[in-house]
Each structure stands twice: as structure tokens, then as C-alpha cells.
Length: 482
Image 1 (tube, one colour):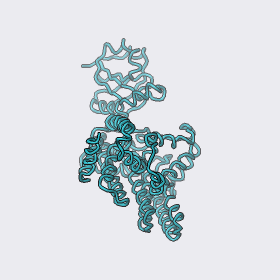
Image 2 (cartoon, helix red, strand yellow):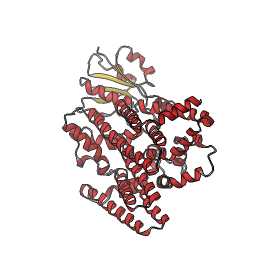
Image 3 (cartoon, helix red, strand yellow):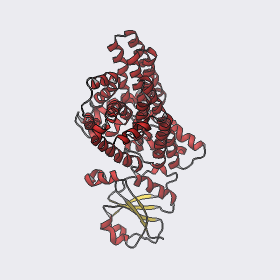
Image 4 (cartoon, one colour):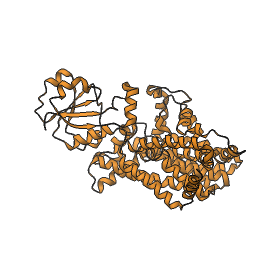
């Protein structure tokens, strides 16, 4: 065990560039192999607005009844348009270009934020490299932070804002305070709810009794808020139309999407941060010191929880913007435990094993894979004109990845399928795994052309709650042709 600890210590003393390269390899691998997206909103009010790039424009990024800001979708739209201008005509590969470019940008901004954090707190090389390992290997980071979704692209800027809040809290410099306001304002533009975290830059000067700095921060924040509302005025006819309608819509219709208790986010964060593993006896004064040092980070998280708890609908994906902050919050405690590995080896081995399993599943098993692959298959087989489906499964596929849609869905029954002329190669049957056993008398005379699988998590989701997860099943496509 002592040899193992010496080896670990020796590795952590290696030059930081090796850990940066390792983290970059992890993120690039996930970007390359994982083309999935997490949420329906990410597709229907995101991807469909900028893909295909051939059919997208700035004015089509939002519908009249949308509560999203056009500025939120603009980064994805810009990358998709650039890819198209460079000759990428496939909508799917335009989408992959967005993942690639924004994923790398997110990685670079977060890397900068973590290195500046290490510089600010004067980490030795071991602690700095340990932070980079957490950045690379925390299960919630590489996949979630490289998706083209609002929570993901806002996360690096919120992390920068939090680090600059910590810098200001430690040294009291006005420029750190104002840069923090700028960074949190960018996060606000990309996901409006994160603007509530800007109150940190009002609270900290008050706690320090630096009222002149408070006025500077408030004035800059107000100015940036006014500037952020100008695009809405020109594109949607009203100043901060999106922000106003988002607030009203969530208040009036939030309950229609489900009601979760006020404890939802505290419990969720408690779980995904592996908090029980950190219950241990630390040196006297250690915990108090860490909370004092990182109080600005905790303020961000608390403000996030307060705002999101005001509305009845609460979704797990909203906390993606906080993932970099979770890494920062956990760092001092995990490093302290790791410094005493022999004493805590059982808990650390279990922690690393659980995280490693979740990391592998989250990073390399794309969600919505069945829907993406089905759309790609149909795009590549334009001879298929009619897709018969049973029980509205699949209810939808990623048609945005199809440039020239040639097919139509037809609701089918056992009786209607018996009348189809399967010698016509334009006819096909797309059926979910749960319906397949009841239609063997139809499928045994057909040819299985393709199967579109789902990942392990989606399989479990369907088995535990089939009613709300019908899209998360393996799909099989049959035709009567060879």
C-alpha cells in the first residue's frame, strides 16, 4: 500500500502539461464517440432551429411563442452555418460540428478557469494536477459539458464567474469583481436563470463593507443587463421579451410539466456529488477553513437552488451548469482524504469504482442513439417512402438530421399490416422491442434491415417506467426486399 501511495504521489508530481493532455484526450474521445443529446428540449427548441443549416436563419431561431432567447441558440447556429459554408452539407455532420467546436471551446474555457483557480489559491503541483484529474474523470463532466445545450454552454462562463468571485473575495480587487460580473452576464445570456447568481457580486462587497465596489458592480451589471435585452427588441419587438416571457410562462405553466418538492435540488446535488463519501473526521478547523475559502462558490450554488426551487417543474439537467462548481467544492475534501489514502482506502476505492462505472456509462453510451441511427438510416435509404409504426413508437425521430425527407409515418395495426404489399420496396415496418413479439407472424416473412439500439441507462429507464420511456427501446426496421 505504501508503494502504491508513493507511486500516486510520484505521478501527481509530473509536469502539469501531461495532465492537460490527458484531460484533452478524455474530452476529445467523448466528443468523437458520443453523438447523443440529453433532453427533448435540447432537440425541439435547439437542434431543430439550427439544423439543417441550409434551412436556418437568425430569424428562424425562435418561434413567436418561444420563451428562449435567440442569443441562446446563436452560438450553435453560428457553428452550423460555418460548417455549411465549409462544405458540410449533411445535417448530421453539421450537428457533429457543433458538438466538436463548442465542446472544445467549453473544455478550453474550463481549463483556463481551473488553472486560474489553482494560481489564485497557490496550489502546489500535486493539488493542481489532482484538480485536473477530477476535471477529466468526474462522471458528470466530459459528456454533459460537451453537449450543444443551454446548460452546457453556459457552464464554463459560470465557472469563470465563480472563480473570479473567489479571487475578489480573497484579494478585494475591483477588477476581479468587475470581470466576474462580465462572466456571469455571459452565462446569463446563454441561460437566463443563471443571472440570479450575479447577486453574488452584490453580496460579497456588502459583506466586505466595500460600498463603492458594490456600486461599481451594480452599475456594470445593470448596464450589461440592458445591453442583453437589445437583440430581443429588434428580433422580437420587445425589450427583454424572452426573459419576461420565460418568467411568466414558468409561473403560469410550470406545474404542467410536473411538480417536484422543494428538496429536489438539495437531494440531487447531495447524491451526484457523492456527499456520503466525504463524511469523515478531518483535522481541526479544516472544514471551517474550506467553507470560508470557498464561500463564493457556495453562494453561487445556494442562489441557484433558491431560484430553481421557486418553480414547481425541476429537471435534473438544470444542474449541469453547476458541474464545474461541484468539482471545485469537492476538491479540498477529496484531496485531504486521498492524502490519507491508507486510512480511507475502502471508501476511496468504492468512490472511484462508482464514479468510474458512471463515467464509462455516461461518456460512451450515447442517449437517443436509436432515434439518431433510425433517422440516419432513412436518410441513406431514400427508396423507403412509407414507415409503418405500431402504438406510436417511435413517436418521433431526429428528422432534423434528414436534409430531404422522403418518407411518411403511418400508424399501423395487426390487421393493416396484413394488407401491405411488402414486395414494394418503398414499404417498411419500424417497430419497438416491446411490440415485436406480438407481430412475429408479420415479421417472419420480412427481412430485418437494421436494428437501432439504446444505451444501458435508457434500457433501465424503460424497464422501471415503461409508460414514460417508450422512445427508449430498441427499434427494428423490416422490409420485404433483400
